[in-house]
Image (cartoon, rainbow, N blue to C red; front, side, top):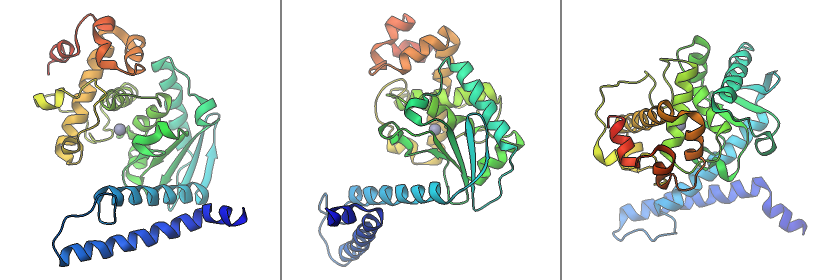
Length: 289
Ligand SMILES: [Zn+2]
């Protein structure tokens, strides 16, 4: 029993992962030296490497949550700092966003699931700002937001709304469509801070952007975010812009409550005729894409 507990302890898990990572680089070296494809599920397989990278990132974030210092606690939000000094005034900014997100969506933060308080961590160790576990947040929903120092500085200066984009993920944590999720996060960020940049559109929106047809086939569906569209910064910007533009059109057309029905549906692509009286494709065309 004790042995089992020891095996499961976090330190041992990290050690095993580090060993696996080491064997990966050895395997990569072997591949460079000799021909032959990588074997799926084995060291050298990109899926295995991605899995280990993710596990290590999770461990790093768990450590960050443990070591970060509490700056200030408000009625709903706690602010933490790690590697820099965060102005306690940031609390008022996030509390304001908390209230407005509830007001705009007509939804309450689900404290029974997310925990009693929203915890915002500003850390020099964060590259891209995100919620706890990123895209996989619904598998382990917690009220945790990680922000990098640039996003925090922009939040304080009033020029960036990424912190609202990330907080929106918490209030609408259960999602089925990636484009509806990105779109509503940016829509809410724009409603609360008009004109501010957020997420993959740090300089706001260029409405003259032409959205490729191939990209519109993802809007409002449960299709997985295409790597080719999200990995590269330029097409990523277009993909997020298209998601925002579509969601804005939907909310402007029939209001937030109808949009929430679409968002909370497991198969949103089938709900358009019932909720909007038009197909998904027709709605995309009506939105000018
Ligand atoms: Zn996002």
